Image 1 (spheres, rainbow, N blue to C red):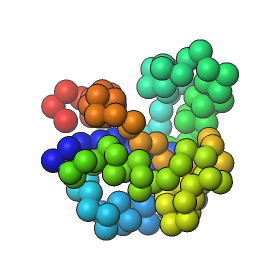
Image 2: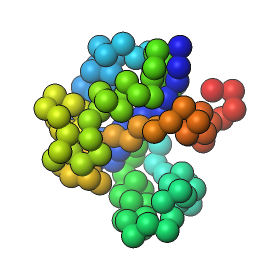
Image 3: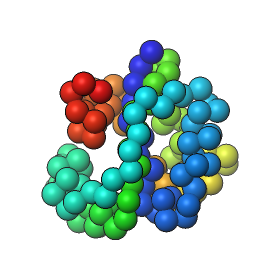
Length: 135
């Protein structure tokens, strides 16, 4: 079994769709191994998205991710990273395939309902970021 990280972002939390997203994730065969609701500080959001620091959208991304609670979770299943990314849809919700999480619950490229790790290496780092080394 492989692990990956998904975060239900503040826009989806505000829409009160946490339960529906979790239902769909479990129905897709993912086991939720760890989960918490958290409010990211500016410093934590900047650290998490440090890879994007030089990008023009970095400030807006940090502001968005600190705008309300988020729900990070460690998920497990075979081929977890690739399967989750396909399941949630394209980063830009307007371009995501019908039926995907981002198409159903997102509105654009930033308010796209969820974050998902993009590689097994980043999944391990991101899970540790939210849940510690023992995760």
